[in-house]
Image (cartoon, rainbow, N blue to C red; front, side, top):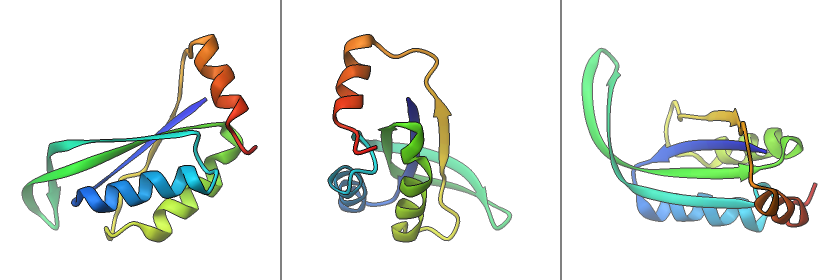
Length: 103
């Protein structure tokens, strides 16, 4: 199982990206967290913004399709997109995820 995430500035955008990915079968689950406070450098200046994090759970064969779908709809010029492999997943949760994956 993989975990991917991105951030956006509006809760409505986060909800749309989360729900749409699950509806399209690109992720088995998506969670919206926030607001969170992000500190970063953009165009040479320090920034501090409130954002909403979308965390996706997906199977490895959904990775490329989910990434393309999210990035095509993302409002940022340079969206955060990070994907990691889960080191461990509960057996029941993994069974549920596999049963609900369109892969």
